[in-house]
Length: 430
Image (cartoon, rainbow, N blue to C red; front, side, top):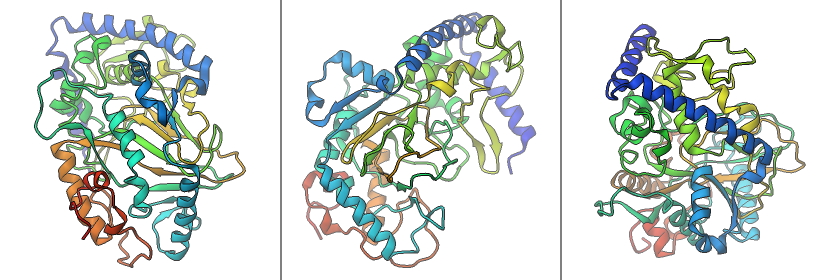
């Protein structure tokens, strides 16, 4: 168990350590904070007015025709629906095959146990994860990232996608989910503690939030998301989280919700621990910048709490992060169809709709985008060993049953050379 007292002392010291690196820090951070709040007021109004239409959409065949202004818009919003990545009929067949697999293997781990809808299956429908069109999308979306210099870094290649095996859900209509409130994956206090993360957020922490580039690779590639060894942390760097749709799903039907402005949400969540309100949180004037003041005297890191294995977070809330206006700005992604893919950048605040008011299942595979880096390559090589053995990937614990599964994907299912490279499998089928 992490001592609350020790944790409080540690993070209070952390705040002072961070600001000490910036000359005239109180004035500079306060000016930056006030500028940020003004921008948030304007941008959140725009998001609320447009709703789901705010999220960019493009057909797979037109990805390479987008102009720089469109790419910058996608970068800022951090979310996109890509239509027609896989043939609709093929995606529907994958869902049928998955349902048959779950029936044939009733010991599949999933939630809720009496009617499994979130299934921890990783090596079923491997053809989907290694599909050439899916890998082409990975390459395209990984190239939204960039480096400060043109210097080639050994082992890093934006044009070589890797496959990260994850789970899937087949969600029934009418069932309420309370498992994914607004949150950000990839570290809690590590975002301030880890030196690489701190370098990634350096512009924000030095009072220049407008210079922050969420797609700058320096610092991010080597960032440590779990300094205390927390469980259930992805050890590969996923540039974008992703879904591959196996059914038609629209707003209110158990779909994804996002806060669609990565620079703003990054800047706000990173600066928020250095400011406190001077009026009650429920005051009607809580959004006024005059009612907030710079304060590093407390250990408060809003929405991050100590726990047995370190800290949990980030989970922004309407009360503690009022300027994000989360109750109105967490917008549902537009309707998508089987074979479409939905991506959201790794820093995006996201959640899953609690209600599913539709008349049919909402089914997606979790398929994030991963690029070639030394760390990612090492992980996918270990993952390949688990694939060939038919066991869970390294980031996911075994279900503990040791019962065999009928119908798992096998080496011979991965035929295309690009697919075998992406899964770090031998060039020839064994």
